[in-house]
Length: 337
Image (cartoon, rainbow, N blue to C red):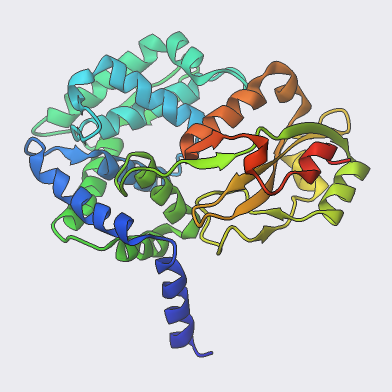
């Protein structure tokens, strides 16, 4: 297969990820921008802009800190939100500035970002005021650094605002050209890779931009604590599907279990054990697959792992169903023995 045939095959696989109703809904979604106040951006556009800013400014923060930053700005500046439809452009730098301020004031890796945001209230307010002043300044300074914590960490507001304006201009350039869902997906891949594109597609589905989100069924599943030997036996004797419901692989194909060393690096191994949650999930194509989701024993004991599973169900549209509705049950019933 030559490079042109390979490209055609890749495009065809991308197209198979979407239904005709999703493609039609995406075209209608792009028309929503016309109903916004002049200068405003759609919810999807601001998310795309935030992803680009994060990539270009190397702001690699966990999702929980991003969520805390967004919630903080929304609560303090509700006028910058118009339901689920639009956002005022200034919301973008406010979110990024708040993100940095929260991150700079985190005192421990396991600290709740919202708790950190409350503790850093004065630093966040100082950051927001600086952004608002610089945003409307007709002759802004080229450098405008402020401290974001008691240790003296600095944030250049001028650089942040300039980058935000540049990124928003690029995002809005695409608004004038209606694109198909397949073209948009390919553009996202070309920009930042398939993982980024899949996250954006997941977000579009979550906000209803691709039509009503289908409800997928899943089992309650079973969580077990496994030592290294038992984990190796599980991964060697049983097949599991890709755990990402939005993955581009056909039918959520077979996936390799992470090696034990990777689990250690990810912080999942505690006292020589790892937590593995095994359950069955319905795919968007209508078939069923078995997945294994990893966590740490302390997360299971504290209930944090259970909360994470609930959040995962909400994010991807899973609904726990009766056991009798599911064709894949044996491994769960055995508790991965």
